Amino acid sequence: MNWLQLITAFVLFLLGIYLSAFFSGSEIGFYRLSYIRLTIDSHAGDRIAKRLLWFAQHPSYFVATTLVGNNVSNYMITLAIGLLASDAVWMEIVATLLISPIVFVFAELMPKNLYYRAPMTLLRRDSKKFIVFFRLFLVITFPLIWISKLFERFEKSENRTLELVLGRKRLVQVLSHGHQQGLLTDVQNRLIHGLLHTATQPIGDSMIPANRVLGVDDDTSRQETIEYARRYGVSSVAVKCSEAVASWYGYVRVVDLVVSQKPLSALIRKMPRLESSSNKLEALLALRSSGQAYGVVCDGATNLGTISERGLIEQMLRSEQTVVPHIPSSR
Image (cartoon, rainbow, N blue to C red; front, side, top):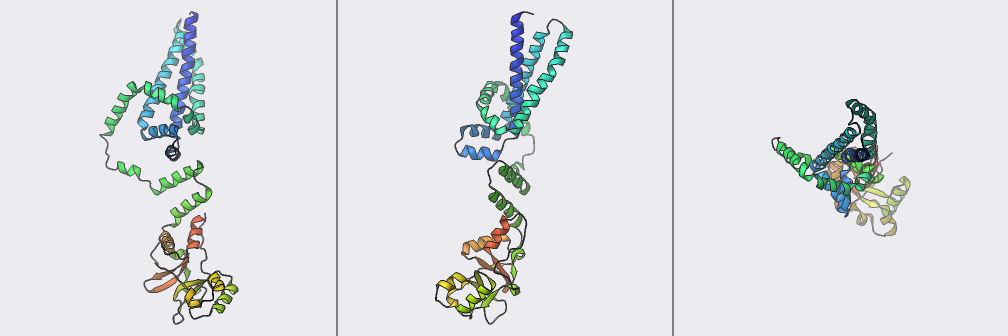
């Protein structure tokens, strides 16, 4: 063995180890990428994120490039071992046994662990390098991609559009991943999970029954209403018709009673009527659109109780579901 052959084998071995580590790690990192973060960064004008997002949307090109790259690197390592042990067959066997642990650790195990732990950072750093290999191997990878697409045509594709629709469990996973990636704050994460878990629940769970609502008749004087609010420590008082029992239809804010000299009847805010079959999200949207803080839950012409916008929002922000008092109930 001459020096030129030894140097060539050594260079081929190091280059093969490097390429194997690069393509093996890139493949693991690709499957660990956050599609949400790539989308947000690409819309913000990040050119590297746009490149990675394109590969995420066309995974066959990425996989084919890493497949060809791994085979090329393995061939280079094999060629290097063959040059080093060209004198005898037993030397080739011994060299293979000695070098295999080095290849496994430095070309497979370590890079895969690194890319698994920091996929975004490492792939962003190596994106230009991967683009070079992608274009270099395109002559070889294009037939592979074409064959894979040909096989896909024989598969049933009626339900392929369903892959674009996020089910509830998948959406929860995406949001959790987004929170881990720092895309959602704690409050935003709690609000989204609250919406997912409480939006479809009936409003009866958050309703104060009509016979427990603290309020006054609509013929009560201003001063009596203020004293009533001070006695129970409330900021709003429900109002009902004096001729009927539990016929709540409006509320009055204590601050309006204090700053205004108008009679109680002129300060009453009418509560929107919400059907008991509505869910919590529908009730919250109805209260927001009406501009009122409280609503009446009814079943046809029968008033069942009251519900508040603030209480619904608090439930959606809480990790544990609890019934939140609205217009205070009687003790």
